[in-house]
Length: 155
Image (cartoon, rainbow, N blue to C red; front, side, top):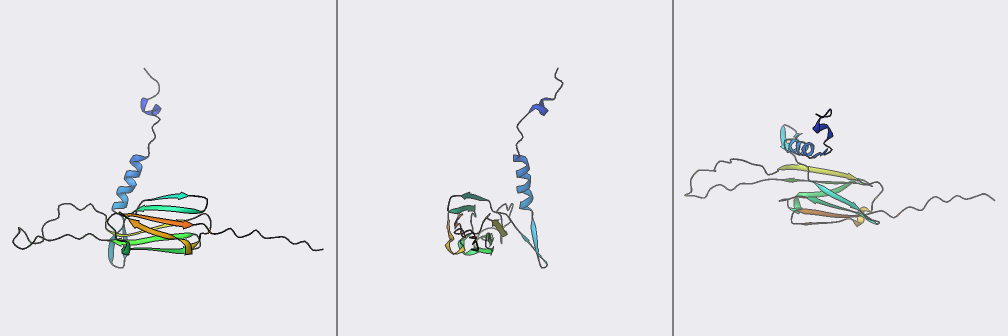
């Protein structure tokens, strides 16, 4: 007989169920735009830092590059936002039904927005963005360091 519960000794403190809960919650998040409620989702990004730049890769499956906007809100914060829609084809003439019935819709639609603040200013003019197979890749060069202030002694 043990005095300590086995579940207490279990050291697998995985946060996976919590992250699944947060993802599910995000699927049902909406943002008010006037009187309309527009569904939103949050694309996932990986960020890497190298000596001279930051690299961001984000998953935007099914989104065309024309539907994505990238801008800076300040010298070290980049904002990536856009919109995605899902369209369904209605049955052709002569086929059964008019418009068809959607049984389930799980694809993410609506607006999205992500902002990333870098720990130091970046070179906004040197940012390069590409999109291939639903993955948005950004290369954000770090700004050249401003020379430290020089002290001048009076003679």
